[in-house]
Image 1: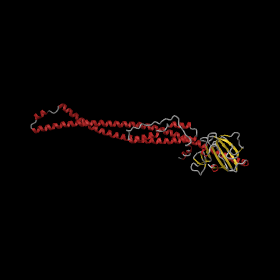
Image 2: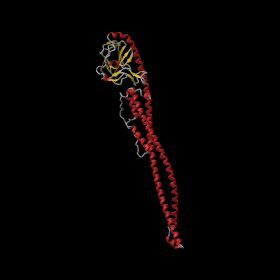
Image 3: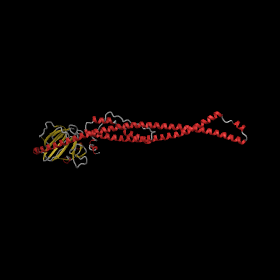
Image 4: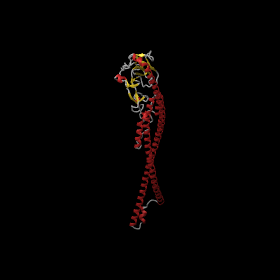
Length: 410
C-alpha cells in the first residue's frame, strides 16, 4: 500500500530496541504427526523464532518511541511480522484439521471393521461353547468303544477318520478364535493410538487458535493506533505547510524591504561559501531532490509521494558554527514546527539563504541586522522535524528553491 511507503526514508535513520523482549510461545512439533502437520508446525515455529511478544512490542512502540513517523514505521514492520505469523498459524490450523479429519475417518472405518470382526468372533465363541458343553456331557472320543462297536473294518476306519476330523475342527476353531481375539486387541490398540493422536492434535489446534486470536486482536489494535497516528501526522503536515507558506510570504515582503540594504552591504553577488566550515561535503546526509519523507514540500514532478527536499542537510557535531553563506540582512524565525529555529538571510538581487534546525542563534543577532559573509550566525542543532543534529541549508532565487550544490560545487 502507498501509505506503507511514504516514510521509508527514515527507516535507516531511526533504530528501535524493545525493552524486556520475550519469546513468543512455540508449539512442540511431534515428528510422529502427519508430515504435512509437522512441516506446518516447524514453519510456524521458525516464523516466530526471532519475534518478541507482539502485545509487548505494541506497548513499547506506543510508550517508548516519541516520533510519530518512527512509530508508524515500527507499526508497519510489526504488522508485516504479524501477517507472516497469522499466515503460518492459519496454515498450521488447516493442516491440523485435515489430519484430524483423516484420523477421524480412519477411526470410524476401524471401528466398523472391529464390529464386523467381533460379530464373527461372537458366532465362533458360541460354537465353541456348544462344543465344550457337548464334550462336558458326553466326554471325549472313546477310541476303544469305536473299535468294539464297529461291525467291520470299513466302519471302524470311517469312525476313526470322523473322530480325527472332529478333533482337527476343534483345533482350528480354537486357533481361529485365538487369532481373531489377537486381531481385535491389535485393532483396538491402533484405534486407541489414533484417538490419542487426535486428542493431541485437538489440543495443539486449540493452542494455535488461541495464539491466532491474540495476534488478530493485536493486529487490529495496531491498525487502529496507526490510523490515529496517520491522522495526527496529516494534521501536522497541514500545520507545517501552512507555517511554511506564512514564512515564504513574510520573506517575500522582507525581500522588498531588505534587498537595497543587502546589496549596499555587498550581498547578492550569486557567489556563496560553504555554511559549515568545520565539516565539508562529506557531511552531507541528504541532498537536494525528490524525497519519500512525508513532511517535505509537494512537487508533482517527483515520483509518488511527490515530495521534494528543498535544500541539503549537513550533519556535524552538535553546536557546530554556522556561517553566513553571503552578506545579507538576517531574519530570525525561532520555534517553527518544521524548520525549528530558522534563520533567513536576504542577500539582494533575488537571492536568499535558509538555515534550519538550529540549536541557537549567534549572540546579539537580531532581525534586520546586516551580517557579513563568513560571519558565525548560528549553531547546528536538531529542532523542528529533525532526525538528528544537522543544518538544513537552502538557496532560493526569487523565492524559488534551487539545488545549493549548483553554487557550492558539492
